[in-house]
Image 1 (cartoon, rainbow, N blue to C red):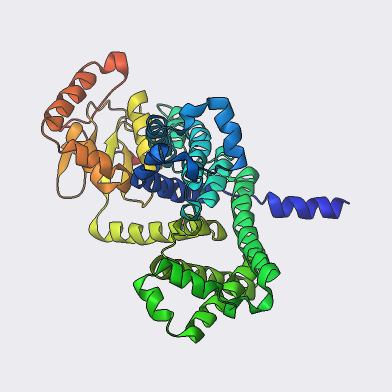
Image 2: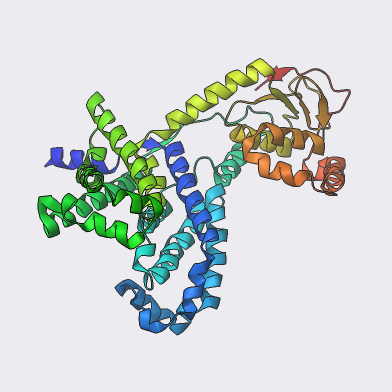
Length: 430
């Protein structure tokens, strides 16, 4: 019995790096955010003729709770706005769990409404709903997020070294990734089972694929319809691909298993392109979830290594801060958390006993302080590029300099600081 329990736990609860879960969060939330922002037409179904309305059973329960107002354009537009805000917060990782708890059911509601009128329009969205629900339960905001930066900053203490980076692993993070992977593999496998059960092994040449080409009547589909043997090969390969989806759940300790998975995913990407241009069906919601089949944090480390080499060759940005100032230390700690590609060299300029008064950055070509130092840092950190764009808007620089000066002049009360032009050379690095 213990062997069975251990095998069960190893499969469902593998300890994986929190960074892996965070990358999955960004992929899923990024897709859902773009999807909702680009599909405002879903709200218009509230004006559609109810003769064509056939909601899912679970949506009928929702309607009984909310009432008929749940199917009006005003209500659906409100859902869209809340969805965009919650998905954006989940993407950047601020109040991550709450944002995901709000986004998951509303995203399902958004597409369940459309599905009630147009059954063919919701392909791939259920996978995203499942992914959002799993992410809401798991610790999705503990890496690559504003939540993790705030937590890290609170751990920073004046007079101490900046908190060390720890690549944490968590079993609940592994559970969330496994749930998404199992759902994808099972859904594809059941699709193949349904085809074989209804039409038998002859499904590829039974006319179902040809009928879909005629119904969609795309330019490429109409061309392929002239060559039945191509249609049959495409249908047969798609059926084989769906039937072998469970290979993605095999242990990846052996070379052949990794190659089977990679081949399966590669065909999946090809299938998505074919479906889009041949059948006019969008499966991108499924594809964005394929990331769960890979240890994506390894790719992130390789990108960081390349960026680090690039930075060493062309110069990194030195950041001078007062290690005796609470606000300065917390700011430096947050910057270290945002430095995903090793572009910064953080220097405690107060380590020699001095008390610097200005926050400063030096990229080897010029040394700037105050608000301009923060803007220089934003150029070096991709995560801050949106803020960099805002910093160049008319009036922002003027206001930024004065706000920074106001805080620096009152550092005794608010704990702010920056490094002066006459400051001594850095005494130590952290």
